[in-house]
Length: 321
Image 1: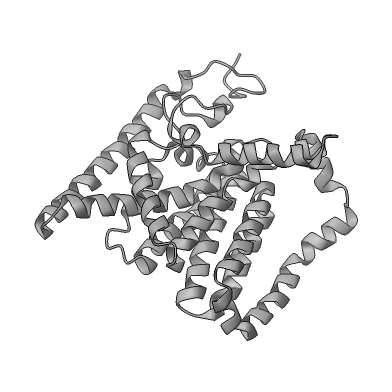
Image 2 (image 1 turned 30 degrees about the vertical axis):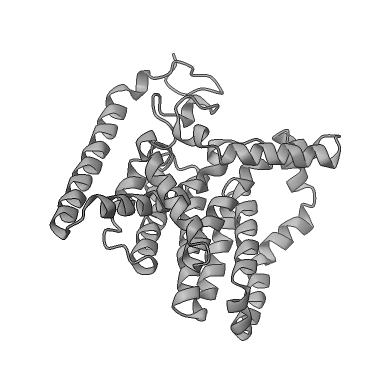
């Protein structure tokens, strides 16, 4: 089961690299794969076979397909919609993320969609085809969604005012964008979702993420950067429907990795005024990332079994007497 999960998540890994290679023209695009593999939250969950990592992989494939649609050919719209459907059906919180992403992309690139309205019209027909299983499910199980939210004790099912619900949603959403939550250790998540002593992302990469994010904000008129900003804005929406939790917002690893890689490249370009110096910097960074991957794997294999001693329902769930 875990092997199948790992194979499917390769879709996401390769899509991140291809986005940077083809649409941002980053020569050293492979750095993104090493950055992703050393990201603790991905390192841990990509080995668990949880559906959230599969949804994240499909979401990344969706973004790559959308880039192809926007920059290569409108015919890639069908691949984009198919990848969106895979994301939608794989994991409940991903439904909100994909719907928000698609809505924002529709608004953001409306002129392009209108210029290709014939293809877009066919896309709407394809959406209806893809949505048929969902409509059928809702028809036979009309209370399934509300029952699931009730099971998770979502504030949307509580008897409170709509304004309070919106405020709670806003609070949970902001938690999903919190730098402190994602980059610093000691999070609120269950022990089985945490690598002790690590943040969800390595703190050392925070400056690179901020450089990449600032670059995208300055170039927001460029559709490529705008897509990444939309992905970042959309990522926490799924988890905000109930209570922010790492698995419900795992999709955020996609834009964070892309921004971090852009930041690394910008940093190395500034650091290296001459071509030979730049090549040496790239090689050095490559070696550091490789050694970091090996060190993290070694640490986990040697010590993770003793990180926590809670083997109950909210702990590791295995290993106790």
